Amino acid sequence: MQVPHQLDIAFTQPAPRPLALDRVVWMCRSRGHEIAALEFDAGDAGRPGSARLTVVGDASRLQLLLCRLAGLIDVASVAVRGDDGRQPQPPM
Image (cartoon, rainbow, N blue to C red):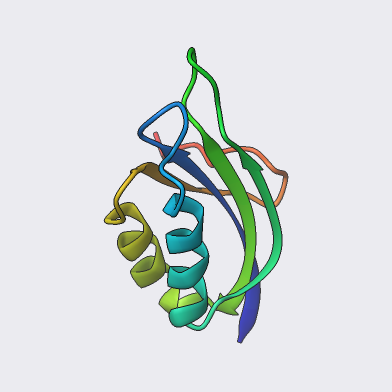
């Protein structure tokens, strides 16, 4: 079943290397997830770059995609946002 997921990606450097975003897009597409929306912020001297993506793909393959994205060069973290646009809270 094809399901949309919102991902937040933080990069390790204020201005990620030129191919950092290309690697993220390639990984999503190669793992069978279509990119429906993408916002990119290159960051500046005081804050790292970031990307927000909406990917559409098989929900059962999302965890593999997240692991692959987290392992990319220049990627500091990957988070999935909930339906309301906020970070899901861990269970107490």
